[in-house]
Length: 154
Image 1 (cartoon, one colour):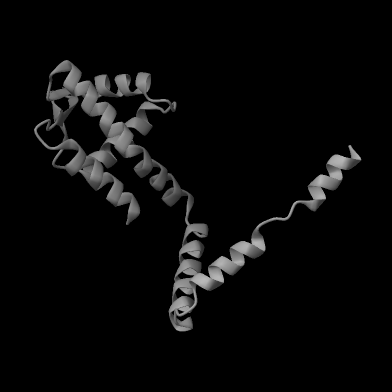
Image 2: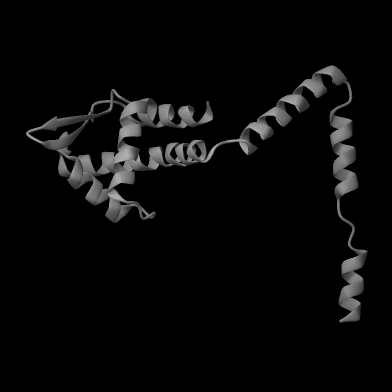
């Protein structure tokens, strides 16, 4: 066991090599430019640390939206429909989605989905029942998924 311990002590970590590589890569770049980049990175890190709980929850919801949109689209394509009761869609999502969420959470996600891509998903109330309409003619990957992923990056 003592020999194993000795072997662990003798292992050199590549930190010096990594530092030298970074230094050599940064040669020729103005220090003012590097300091601007560093200050922007610090500002971004502070912004992430200072987010409120509600903003973090909204970010989690936005991250989930592309997967939820794919599941909704798959469900509509399988049943060959454009309009379905929202309750039925939520029940299907609850069965197929890996995370357990309440009906209220699902409605919040679908409302956010409608807000982010209003041309694809539309909620309507007819005779006291809420329906969701999905436009299957739209190029899904180009119009819906890219827009949802871009919303998170902004």
